[in-house]
Every structure is written in C-alpha cells, then in structure tokens.
Image 1 (tube, helix red, strand yellow):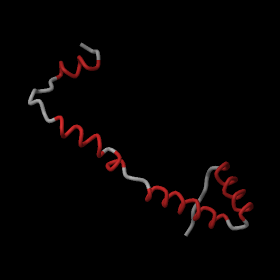
Image 2 (image 1 turned 180 degrees about the horizontal axis):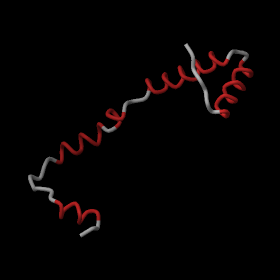
Image 3 (image 1 turned 180 degrees about the vertical axis):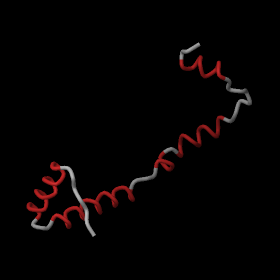
Image 4 (image 1 turned 120 degrees about the vertical axis):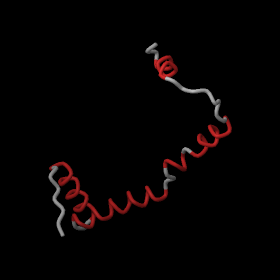
Length: 79
C-alpha cells in the first residue's frame, strides 16, 4: 500500500514532526489522522447543531401563502 505526498510543504511538515516525535512518517500521519477523526466523532453533526433552529421554525408554522418569484426578487432587492 502506498501514499504519495505531492506537496513539498506537507512532506516537510510530516518529516519534521516525525523527527521531533522520534517516530516514522507513517506513524505521525496515522496519529494526525486519528486525532482528526476522534475530534470529528466527538463533535455534534451539523444536523444536531441545527436542531434548535429547526425546532423554532417548526413552531412558527406555515403561512399557507405561496412564495412566488416576485417575493424572492423583493427579498434580494431585485424588484
């Protein structure tokens, strides 16, 4: 299995970190990816973050009025 890093700055960073941590480039990349995956897994999803907004919108209800082209043009200042 291979991974090709075609960005000199990224390769230099990986090599520098590996040297400073006394490990290989593969291990330093594995650690970095694992840390990022762990952070993302601990963070609430966008859907979860938007839950309060969705709840507020649901409480407001629908007006029953049609939203036509003129309505959107007026909102954007294109009327």
